[in-house]
Image 1 (cartoon, helix red, strand yellow):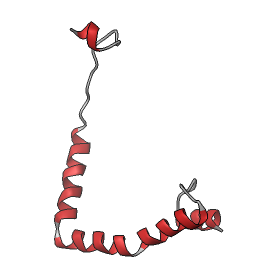
Image 2 (image 1 turned 180 degrees about the horizontal axis):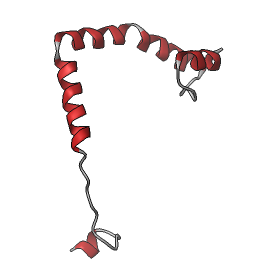
Image 3 (image 1 turned 60 degrees about the vertical axis):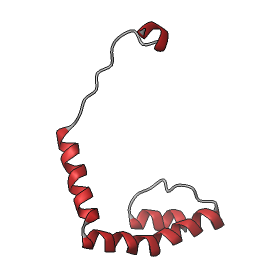
Length: 76
C-alpha cells in the first residue's frame, strides 16, 4: 500500500525530544497558573493592539531585526 500512498523511497524516522516535551509541559503549567493568565490578558491588551495598528496602518508585516533598539530603528 505504501507505493500507492507516498513517493518516498525509504521509511521516515520521527524523533521526539524529551527536553522539548519538558519545556512544553512547564510552559503550559505557567500559562494555566493565575499569574500566567494575568500576564496573557495583559499582553492581549497592551502590545498586541500596537502591532495590529502597525500592520494595518503602515503595511508592516514582519520585523526583520530583533530587540527593542533594532525594531525601533526599523519602525523609524
